[in-house]
Image 1 (tube, rainbow over the protein chains, first blue to last red):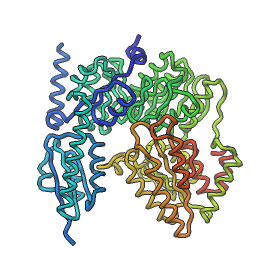
Image 2: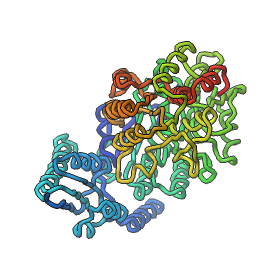
Image 3: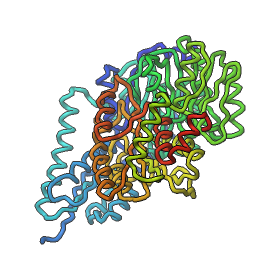
Length: 63
Length: 523
């Protein structure tokens, strides 16, 4: 079964990053949801954040 | 009179999401003695905004992207101090609410996954600059992604969708406002039953209109997959559209596939049509654009409006032919309504002023109005001009530093007021969008402004017609029937779809010739 066909048969379980109201709506509907207390990575420095993310990518590629 | 005071409060490393900040700013503005207020993360562009509105204090000028700035201009120092204290209380109450919920909040995607074993989707609405990084992380963790954020670069979109295809995942967006997956409404979506129709859409409000109409007839949705407005561009090449179409083709609960979007890039179009024919299921294709051909071949039915997409899909399910109709009410009743509104206008003709919250609904309005009334001025198309005007109030120029009109009616209320003062305007045309994520009382938010607008016109010896459609379902949190009743109590003619509301507005503005053309089937 393709990953999408399998997904269509699963219960939706959501990780929410950003607008908190979306997590609240899902919670009210009884959908399992975790809201992330997100803040901009690398203190909001986009270049540093991208660099950090690319290092993580390399780690995963090495595995 | 004491001079106005500007005061600010900077909270270092205190990220808040944009809706929280907009709610806070709105609350501050309504406080006693407050002239203007802002609550923003101090990014360079937001500091510019503060400067333009005269709210940039020396303290705020030194704040960084990760710092929260609350700034107020008030009639007195005391009023400013009260407002800043209130903002502390607002943020404190939010923190307490989260703590009281007893849920420990993870700070990253990776730790969130440990909190929610078996998580399968990331709903991402963080600021665009960081959204692509988070979406990539989510895909690498094997999560499907709904990327609500806009301001994500085209190159990032292509890369993210390429990665998703490689992993067999959905990468919906960027700028994906609506989806319904496994029966769950995500983002701005209506309460729709599960059913036999699967949808792929490049447009959020387009998807809302079609699914709400299906629900009004008791029909439901298997999956409604958003792909973002650029998916059918040459650069993206329909990567997610094809992924979604293939999934719906293989999905045993999907009997009919509906695809909604604007006409694809020429290089993509033939592939879309070929893929629909190969789906092995009946398909409805609603590509909203000029010169789009309607009609049906063996398995694909091409339609011109969102309403037609819903009804064509229903007809296919029931195995009957579908012939588009301009209105669902009988011709006689329609004529009576139009004539009554025209009499109340006390003039021969007038201009339509359409004030939209939904971008695709505005786009559809232009496509329907132009052949009926002539050139339309619209912010959807640079350089356009004409007596009638369609405005997408969700466009960037209206939403910088403000919430989208589906959340906050302030801008639309102001535009309704302005339209009422323009002696050329005979008809105001509106969309009212309900559903999860939308404002708690969208009809109530505009009803008072509509009543005031009609009173203004009356005082000036003119009539003013207001026509609207309500995009929603009986299961929506706002109560569809009550929302329609509130508008009707304000004198609004409420029609069952955007397409019909647009045609009704054209009939009132253009009078008998337009009505006759529509009833004779010459759109």
